[in-house]
Amino acid sequence: MDENTPLINTGPARTSNSRLFLAVFSAVLGNFNFGFAMVYPSPVIPQLRVIDNPHLRLDTQQVAWFGSIFSLGAVSGGLGAMLLNDRMGRKLSIMASAVPSSVGYLVMGAAQEVWMLHLGRFLTGIAAGMTAASIPVYVSEISHPAVRGVLGSTPQMTGVCGSLVLYALGLVLPWRWLAVAGEVPAVLMVLLLCFMPDSPRYLIAQGKEDRAHRALVWLRGPGADITSEFNRIKQSIAAQSRVSWAELGKPFYYKPILISVVMRFLQQMTGITPILVYLEPIFHLTRVSLEPRYDATLVGAVRLLSVIIAASLMDKAGRKALLFTSGYAMGWGPITWLLMSEVLPLSARGVASGLCVGVSWVTAFVLSQLFMHVVEAWGLFLPFLFFCVVCVINIIFTAVCVPETRGRSLEEIENYFRTGRTFTISET
Image (cartoon, rainbow, N blue to C red; front, side):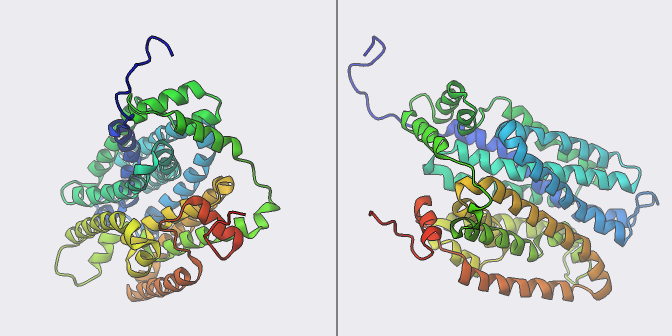
């Protein structure tokens, strides 16, 4: 005991979440930009279909590439972020995504040829892949258990908000100014993250324990007791080991990895990416009385409401119940990401999550590339019938293969895959 130690205990240490919420908000601006960039073609394609400049006018083939090349960029950015996350840290990886994002919007806003539009879309796709791979990791690692579930849903929410804002701005702004507007969240994200700490878990893994301690103090508030949390993180990192290729053949590893990969594949096979990317052109082909640009905005608002409902029901109704009964934004959008983080074994999470990202975005690219060609040849009925069949397959897959993880600890979930039959951990 020294002269700075109080003689009377003034009460339990309290954690303050205000700085944590600020750090999360700063990071998920990248997801806002992701959502904005992904659906950028929706209001832009109708304008570029009829533009007077022949060098920028899009035919069906160019529309397909304009919508789909974003996904190729996301594959590159997601796989690149796997390396950057461990070398640069989570925060710097998120900040680095602002470079391709800003350059991409600048190229599209100043485009004089179709190839410049495609290049801009590819660059913003790289940024989207980087943020999708980095932000959930950063948010989960700086959060404490009491708020991790709620904060874990914020990337999906802000991504939907970004799409809604794009649809809304598309009502009043021409396509070049929409690209200029996309610069704002990326720049704001970088400015705010300059004042935020990096992930304490990453800092400890790099041997920077003093910085990790200061980061935890900042995130939890000056009145919080971080000693036990700091020690748990150190023990968790010390217990991690690399997985060999031979070990990946064990059910404990390959079953959750297969479930996660198939869920990400089926998530995209529902057609969500081409539907959102080509939303306004799709409504142009229907007989809905409301103008297509208003229809797209209305869909964006419904998606946001659905994600909010999903976040509130996830820990009450259960994961499988929402997967059975919902559409995309209330179930197959947010819950597949949550389940992936719950079922993947920690020691194989890096490789497995990279595989999931790759499968997801390659599938999105193929569907987005083919969608407009199929619609031009056979109309909307055929692709939407296909998506309907996929949704039925999703129901069957959920019933047979997906475990219910609500209320289960990560240790119980691991035991389920280890034993193949029970969540209950034997004491012997």
